[in-house]
Length: 251
Ligand code: MF3
Ligand code: CO
Image 1 (cartoon, rainbow, N blue to C red):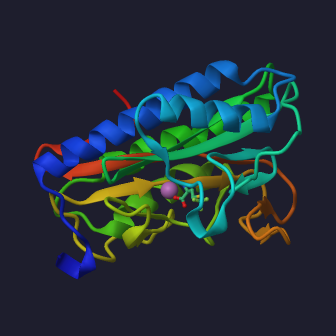
Image 2 (image 1 turned 180 degrees about the vertical axis):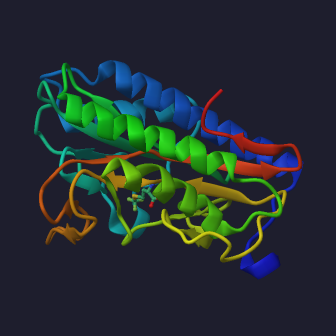
Image 3 (image 1 turned 135 degrees about the vertical axis):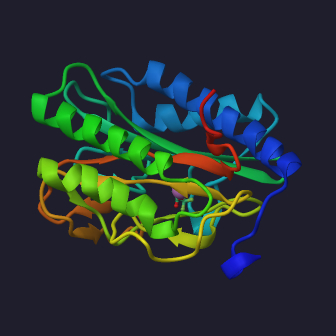
């Protein structure tokens, strides 16, 4: 366990792949269902039923007392939004963050989707956040260091005028949802543990249109931007292999 970071065998990564592909399929189903008028609780119920019929369980349900399957974070909600009877409205951007457990192994992924027609500013934020995760993934090769991942996010989004949330980070993942190491979405690079084949990390940039600061509501979960401007969030579960990064949460 280099630096307390558990290494997974090829066989274990294959099992995480199974869990992660269920996460992918459920998120695809949710994306298709996320139309104006649908409630956040409708999406939560859909995530749960789509997971159960695939023989998996919802990773977030019951985690630290969380009462839902899915985190749904519209607009100024950064992460950990709780499903409510609020309906999706044309122009919303909504982060859907989902995880499952299958045969004891976890997969975790998030995407930010448009509801109906969104503003050009919202679309640019979402696109930049998505692309920043791809840049981060490209750095996930043996020999690089953990902070090279976040440096790639920061180097992509900050010159475009956005800010990176610093109070929440990505994480190792495996037989637990959260394992070592923490994976910040900012640099400088060249710090932290050296990346090795067999590490599996959930990398999840949260990028704000305005200030990087966030607030947590009294519900103990909902994270909002301090200035109430928009935030976007993408996440993949990624295995580091000798052949480079393998994104487990997409085909
Ligand atoms: N993707 C988030 C994370 O990795 C979701 C956790 S929500 C919780 O932390 F409900 F499970 F806490
Ligand atoms: Co996560």
